[in-house]
Structures are given as structure tokens and as C-alpha cells.
Image (cartoon, rainbow, N blue to C red; front, side, top):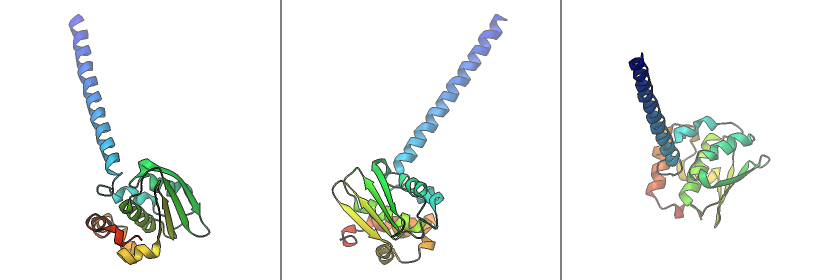
Length: 168
């Protein structure tokens, strides 16, 4: 009986160590995935498709959208002006034109009646309109909802071009 007890304890310890190892590995992968979502270069547009909506009036939906876009780790408050279809996003970070363009474009693709995104950084603000984005990337936002098309038409050009020509 004494030998059986030690065998059970040994098997339990091996299983416990295995479970801890697997959980730790999963946590590292989840953290890596979260870090990748913080940058335009590695953001996965597929992960924000759940926030698609015809109307911008749902503050929770818009907040969650911007919580899952690049630079979300520096996002402050969000203000909505539903009468004028404007979303103001405050960031506690220095400005980044590529993030501003990427996040505004993602918001216009996913929130159908949103007309203006005003992103306020600690050193500069960007007011980007749906019309500007249509001028940069074309008016077919329905096609951009496909993550592969979004990557090809939005993400890649942002990484390859100088955005200073786009935002004045």
C-alpha cells in the first residue's frame, strides 16, 4: 500500500507540472497576441470584425473597437457626438500618423454611419473624415471588411508610403 501511495503522488506531481507548463505556455501566446495587436505592422483586422455595426451610437461597441486597435494601450476616453456622427478618441501618447489613418479607416469600415474620427494625442490631433479615407483608399468599404483585402489595400500601403502626404 505504501508503494501505491507514492506511485499516485508521483503521477499527480507529473500531471500537475504538465498542466502548469501548458497554462504558462498559453499565457505567453496570449500576451504575444495582445502585443501584436498594438502595432499597425502586426495588427490582425480579423480580431475587430465583431465590432461591425450600422450605427455609431453604441458607446460600448466603439470603445471595444478602439480597445482592440493599435495603440489601445494608450487609449484614454472616448466621446461620441451622435448628432454629427463624430467619434473623439483621446490617447495618452505622442502622435502617430499611421495609427491615426489605420484606426480611422478601420472605424469607418466597421461603423457604417460614422463620418469623422478625431484622434487627440498628447502633441497633436488628427481629424479624419470618411471622405478623406475614400480619397486615399477608394469608396468600396464593403470590400475592405474582408481581412485579406484590408491588409492588401490599407495595411500594406500604410507601411510602404509616407503618410505625410495624406494628412495635412
